[in-house]
Length: 262
Image (cartoon, rainbow, N blue to C red; front, side):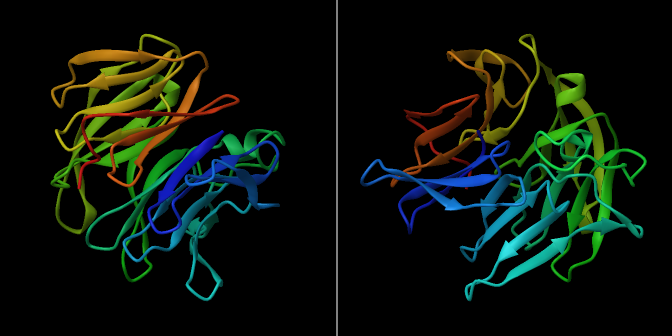
């Protein structure tokens, strides 16, 4: 499972079942699980933007899409420099309305979670879609960029490089320009996947042995060991203090004493 996104209005969680090309909906009130969309363009990560619209990374269509209030689907990004994207993986929104996403090649590497195809981009990069719809490449020195998240004040952007098993930290400048990019933390259990930041600035990162929690300076504070490889996570619940975790074959949750960064 992958791509968890919580809706406080619907009181539900949407998660991606990528190999089966479907999106599942877990109802927080009833506990029931249903198929929300199938086929689903091998969707991976997603968010609800500040207007409550669902923004998804679709590995099958090799695009970032948004579902409008009337049900129309808008392609927010599907190419850069005249060439198709690889297979968008995870996405976050900045308070200025821009969307930031990672573009590894998992969806074109095989038919397991996408469609095998030749990669048109020369590498796997990080992109920004400004509020006017212009796509810009903001980082081009990754192996397999994956999860990403802003610090609470949006002055830093954290990005996982799954291929190199570490988290990098960038300073965010005007018009989406990134500076720095030093390695903040390295995984000692397989590799990292998705990540989120809590209200105290700590990073929660999915890894092969569970969740790793890091101080903003990169110090490992502890691990929440889980029985399956973890892929991604998000905060949710009526108080914003429930951490939902997607694992290989399960959706897990734990109530914390902190909330997501606001």
